[in-house]
Length: 106
Length: 140
Image (cartoon, rainbow over all chains, first blue to last red; front, top):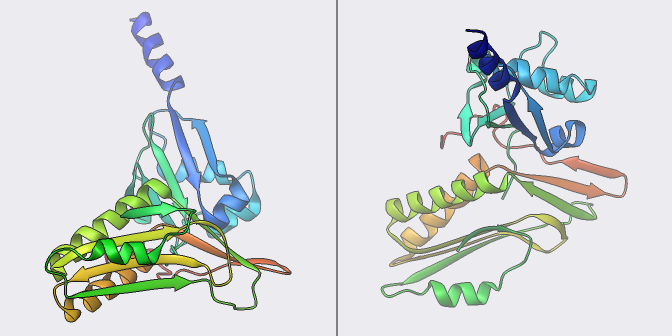
């Protein structure tokens, strides 16, 4: 019983995700951040906790109510996540999360 | 050839190699760093995803417009005024498909491929705003 709990705790401690910011968000928050997460961490809570380290970066991504600004684009492992789903989408061990402003190539 | 790269390409060679059997028209789009009172342009990409998106756009355009050949090369890094940013070479049996395919590809690239441009000026720089301000390109 105890051994089983220890195993779960270790697995939770071992969960890491990579967050990648691009363009203006990268300038404010860094290129690539590898961080540990606990089970059940949501997309929005992870990015908010990471962005809080730079107030300008946080304000670039979140509005005054703490919601994603509507132009922010989110990806998890190369697939788009709608910002409306960010509060109910969990991150998992090994995930690559990308956060960026509207694209402007070409 | 589908690529995100820093190096320039030889457009003449691309045209030669695009002329597959049955080709009646080749259309080249060459997006260039314009002199908008800037010193240079800096481009960055979410490279893996951008390349996958370019490959998807190429497949879709090939099928929809019966294209015989597609090259899309998007450059990243620092580029000077007059340098090539994006080269699209499309070959088709007829001009209608070639023009339409080329136009479709450039609009799809602008709508959904994760690439960003920063115009560098004497006073600093400014990020070029995207054309899909709500982040929901129609191509997705």
